[in-house]
Length: 496
Image 1: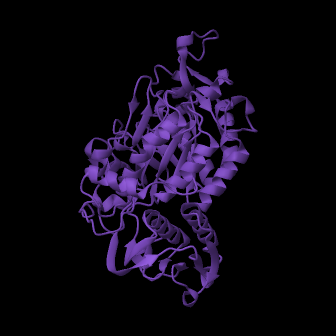
Image 2: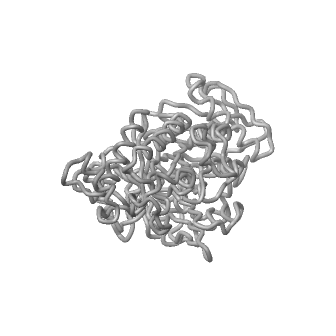
Image 3: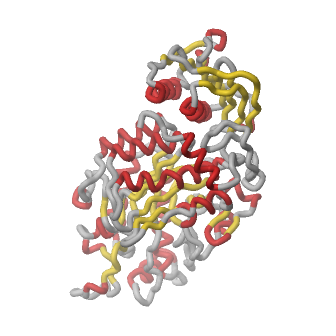
C-alpha cells in the first residue's frame, strides 16, 4: 500500500470521489445508468453479498428516483447499465476493504470480502450522483488505515436516534467504518439500564433503539464502539451512589464539599467494583462488536498523600512498593480481563497510562492517543506492545465550549496532517505504521450550545477531510480550496 507521504500528489484525471480512488485508468466511452439498470450479485456469492446488494439497490433508488431491481445472476446475464457485485479477487494488495471497479457498458465490482464490495458500491453511488453518464475506466482502491470514523458525545448532550441513523449512512458514504458512542460522562448517563436504572438521565437511548442502530450499522459496515466512562467522569452515576465518591479525607464522617473529587469513584472500595462490574456485564452483552471502550481518562487521583486509601489499597494488592497510581492501573487491567472474557478488546484514552511502581497496563489494551501531555509518546506505547489510534486534538476535535466552538483545522488537516502524525509533532516510525489503527472526528459537548443540525453542518467538512487522509489515496487537489469544490460535487449519502 502507498504511504501517506507518497500519496500526496494531486491527480485531477481520476473521477471525483471522497476519498479519492487509489488508482484509476481511463478508457474510451461512457456507462449509462437507466431506469432499467439492476444491481446483480454474483450467484456464487449470493448469500455473502445479499445485504450489500440490497442496500446498494435501495440507495440507488433513493438517489435516482428509479425503482432499482436487485437480483442474483452471472456476468453473462448482465444487461447494459447493470451493476455487478462479486467476490473472489486475486489481488492480494486490496485487503479486506479494497475492491476493483471496471466501468464500461456495465459497472463491475470485485473484492475479497463483502466489506470491499460495499465500498465499491459507495464509489458507484458518488459517481452516479454526479451524472447518469460515467466515463469508462478501471480502478483499484483500498484504505491506508483500518479504522475511520466518528465519535459522538451522547453523555453530555443527547443526540436523537434519527440523527445517529443519518450519520451512520453519512459516514459509510465516505467509506468510514466506525461510530464511537460516548454514552456517559459527568453530565449524563444516556442509555437505558436494567441493572442500575437510577443512574439513567432523560432523554436517553433505549436498548431497543440501540439494537436498531446496531442493525443499521451492520448493514452499512459500521462498527459501533460503546464507551461508558470509568473510573473517572462518573458524576452522573455517583450522584446516586454518594458513598462511592472519592474523597480526600475518606475517614472523615462529615466530609466537607471540597473533599469530594468530582466524578471520580473510590477504587479502594469493593462496592465500586461491584457497581462497575454490573454495568460492564449489562452492556457487554448488548453490543456485539469487537470493542469495549473503558474511557479511563483524567483520573487525577495519583498522589498517595491526598488519597491515602488508594495508596493503602494498592499496596494491599501489589506490594509495599506500590503507589496510589497503581490502584488505577490495576483497575484497567481488572476491567480488561472482564472485557477479554467477553471476547472483546478493551480501548482506553492514553493520558493515564504509566506512572505506577508495581503495575503496567496490559499490552493488549488498544490506546486512543488524544494528548501528548502524558508519560509516553505514541511510539513508546507501540514499543510497549499497544495498538494505538490517532485521536489527536488537532485536527480531530470538535468541542462545544461555553462561549465558543473549537473546530478542526481542516486546511492543515488536508494539506499537511497525516494519520501517523500525532499531537505536537509526535511522529510514528514508518516501521510501526501498521500498529496505528486510524482516526476519528470527535464531537465533544462540554456545553450544550449548538443544536443537532448545527453540529451536523459543522462536521461535514471535517468528516470529509478525515475520510481522505485516513484512506490515504493521492489527492485530487493539492489545496483545501480545490477539495471543497469536490465536497460540493460528491454531496451527501442518499436515503438519509
